[in-house]
Image (cartoon, rainbow, N blue to C red):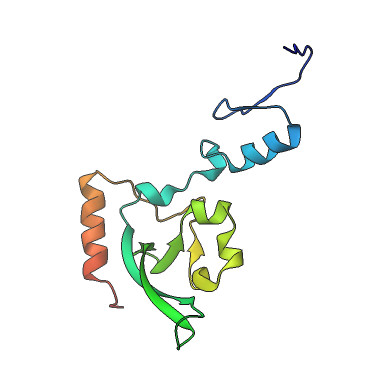
Length: 135
């Protein structure tokens, strides 16, 4: 059995994960789910809803060259935009695939953010949805 002494261990400030390599810990902290800079307010917002969208994927086995699939996406009804979640952003999938070309990343801060739960917020949402599409 080998016993190693004087080993440097790096610990994440956010989740307490431990790693032996400094560069690996720097990368981990940047992408850590518990890092406050990675929190997205959309998940707790009354204006954020799941919506099913159709997406075309390259398919060499299909005579058309692509396949259309239905996928679930987050939509902000206040801003009328479809957004991809942090999991897509952190893996940089939006840079690799055209699937996300018409979507935007969830913002870190939003002036329209309203928490779920209060009565006035639901009234605001109802008012906003009844006027949806009307100037």
